[in-house]
Length: 80
Image (tube, rainbow, N blue to C red; front, top):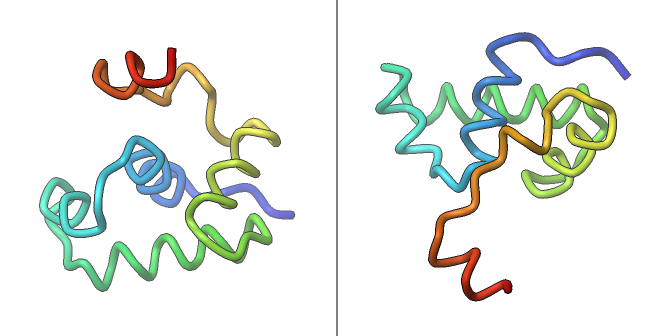
């Protein structure tokens, strides 16, 4: 497995925090298609089939840190 690029890591982190491709595209100033392409490349590098699996693998191999994932207060209360 190859390491993620900084762009792939950034976009995957935004996705891991619950942002849609459209939201990510708006913040990064790119198209939703570009966001999809970046995520697809990240999935390939990680050997993942989808967003959830990519996040899980990235956490497991240290590409993302658990401290970078922010749970909204409302979801935190439901999970408790």
